[in-house]
Image (cartoon, rainbow, N blue to C red; front, side):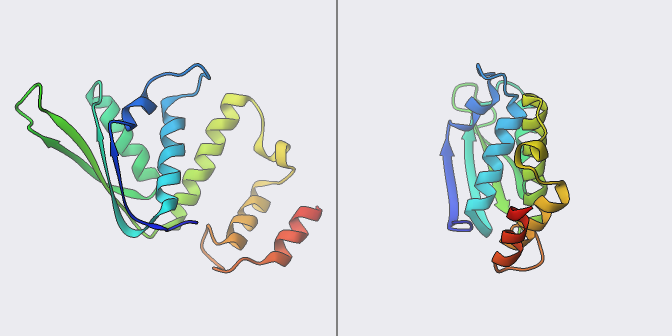
Length: 159
């Protein structure tokens, strides 16, 4: 259920999404999937604190940029910045109430997956982009109606 959590904490898990994997998925795709799910789970105005040990500054910039695409805003806090052993990096984020950012992030994630798989999402589901947007509006993921309109969903499934 979306919007169920007031906060989230992660210790040394996020950096593993930045490493290459066997499935040839790009780190940006994995980060987008993670932050999209995190944004869905958090209530509006709630916070997430994620500790990580990035390999370089580009990784940190990539994490913050992808989080912003998903409607999570914030920045980086460095604990013990002058120490080489005790230095810790934290990404501190707050979820805004913009569901449009989350919906756009979902579409961005699907497009990245389509590019990787070489398939079109509309070919797999038989739905056009407009029809997908109507389904998302009916389910309340994108502005408009807040209640689920089952009649509209049934009509789209029949087509």
